[in-house]
Structures are given as structure tokens and as C-alpha cells.
Amino acid sequence: MSKEAKPFLKWAGGKGQLLCQLSEHLPRKISEEPFTYIEPFVGGGAMLFYMLQSFSNIKKAVINDANEDLILTYRTVKADVELLIARLAEMESEYLVKSQEERSRFFYDIRDRYNQHVGSETERAAQLIFLNKTCFNGLYRVNGKGKFNVPFGRYTNPTICNASVLRSDSQLLNSANVEICQGDFSDTLNHANGLTFVYLDPPYRPLDATSSFTAYAKGDFNDDDQRKLAGFCRQLSDWDCLWMQSNADCSAKNPEDTFFEELYKDYHIFRVFAARFINANPSKRGKLTELLIKNYE
Image (cartoon, rainbow, N blue to C red; front, side, top):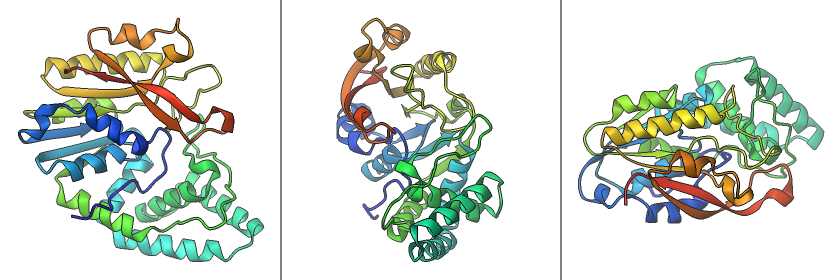
């Protein structure tokens, strides 16, 4: 199986640069026997592709996200990758020969069509990938009405159609037993079966009032949702599932903000260093600590 499988989208909070640290915290037991792997917030899928390529003993993988278009795109990559590649190649060849002004008009035309839900499922998947590769800072963000509102990005020569990565991802999603779901994270509990490991990478709690980016899908992920997630983690523990969660290290920014330390006081909390690449303010990019919370030693 190709080792080229990796995220086909740039996604805020992507775990590509954290995989080495995360792998050190994986439960030892999953190397010893077949297990079910669940990701309730799949996002860009860096952890998914790492796990599928590192553990041949995964008997079933279940990925989920609240973002309907993201899940539609995963399903398209799995089921119709050649049609998707053909459309992306067409968009890329049309886009790259244009002037900057023409590119901008082309971008906003695609963005309007995307927000109006114009086209087949394959077309919508192509629109999402195109926007991701050509928008400002590779950011995915929607407004309160669920409309993608990231502006045009002025990249000189963006790779819009990475055919080799898309084919590798499609091969991996098809060769592994991967079920792709869309809905609330709590629904994934129904897929736990025998030895189960769940990796949770929810929208992060903002570190301060100005870092309120949580809109990967319509509706913010607020503190009540974080509490609901903590309850879900307790359910996972009650079902004897092993789980690991990534989240923001709020107390590093404000020592009095011990929200997660109190919420997960019965579990193991670690800190890992992560580079933040997606931020409109360059001064807020760089290395920060993130929390890693586990229910096992």
C-alpha cells in the first residue's frame, strides 16, 4: 500500500506536524490485537491516514464530522476519485493561465456556486478542494448562515489537483474497512466493538476572546459542547474504550483558566508542543502547547 496517503486538504488544527508526539501516546494494547478505530472529528485526516498506514490490525475504522461538505468530499475521494481528479485538473489548467485579477473573479465565481450548492456531489467536492487550495491561508471557515466566506488567496502557482495523493488516499480508504459518517460526534459510540480506540480532535476552545475561530461548520463549538464532549468521553470509558483527546491549553495562556483541568480531572493530562500555521495574524503563529488527555496509562 502506498505511503503517500496524506491529507488532501489543509485544515485548521491539522495534526500532521504532531504525529510523532501523538504516536508516543498511543495505547500499547492496539499493537497487540485487532481493534476498531474511531475518529468523531476527522477534519483533514492526518491522524486517520497515519493510523491506517501504521496499524494493519485495524479491523474497522469509522470517521465522522459535522461538516457535510467535508464528509461528502471524503466519500467522493473514496468512490469517484478519477472523476474528481479529472474535474480538478480541468479547474487547475483553467485557473493557472489567468491573470491575478481573472483568478480572483474565477475564485469568487466558484465560491458563489459552492455556497449556492450548485452541481453534482463530485462537482461540490471539487469546488471544496479548489477553494481550499486557492483561498486566503488555506483556511476553511463559514459564517453564521453556513456560507464559506474566506477571501481569495494570492498564491503564484498552487497545486489544485494532486492526483497522486488523491489516488493514494482513495486506495487506502477502499482497502481498509473505513466507514464514513456525518453527524454528531456522540453517534460514533454506536460503532464501538471489542477493543476500540477513539481519537478526538474537536474544534479547540479559544485561548482568548480574539481567537474565537471554531466555525468549521455552521454553529460554534462552545463550552456547553465541550462539557457534552467530556460526558461522551466518560461514556467511552464506561464502555471500556480507550480514548485520547487533543485540545487547547487554555491555562498556559491564562493560569486561572483551568476549564479542562477541572473537566478532565479523573484522566491523564499531558502537554505537547504544536506549531500553529493558520492564523490571520502572523504574530500569533508559532509554537504553543496543546493538551493531550487520555483515559489510559
